[in-house]
Image (cartoon, rainbow, N blue to C red; front, side):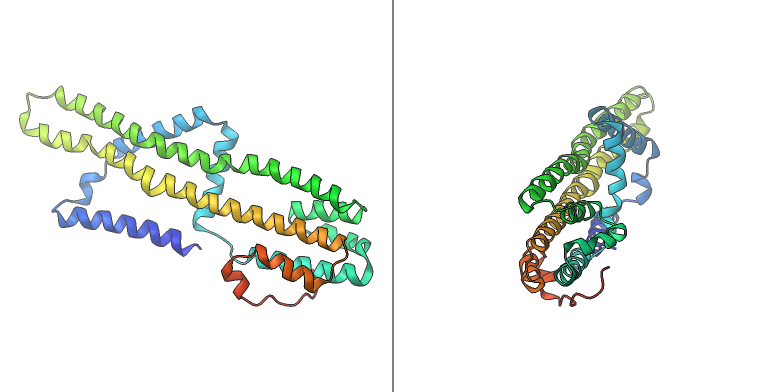
Length: 261
């Protein structure tokens, strides 16, 4: 669980609701299902018009990564690579062929397969960097979906407010309800602005960080496999790959290479 994401959204919601209550407002005043329907439906429709359906679906699947993040993945990958390096140094690079079925990461498995098959380090790097570049192109569209949603939702909120004002103006004969109607109409604007600045845009930023971490992890895997193929000492490989880890990960002690994960 990402404490920063959960804490941030709770703090933001609590601050806004506290301000509303301090000013004498009520939570029920901003609970308008019609306004929410206009903002959510309009924003989602605009996003689907801009992006392919598969991209939108992938973006919402990745949304869980904003709030749930498995820490220590880069350290686990480093330990795994060091175990492979130790085995390859003792038994040769071909001995890793037996471990290939158990490799879960597709990128690492492909790099190790090429290494076991005798691919030259330079050629292996070209092949895997091309695959990584293609993956970057795909992954960059994920946060772009939420950035677009953050741009659309305030405008959709204004549309909802205008629609509400139209309904109010049609009932000016009940002047005592005009003020209440105007207040309700502007709830859509609140929903649009809040969705953009408290959900869509922050999620886009967090997903960019997550995706960059994943790419760094793959770069570390590639560098590790090439180092194994070049026959470097596992200790040298460890020092070399630790530069890819975050400051927090570098401070933690990396367990010595043992069995292959």
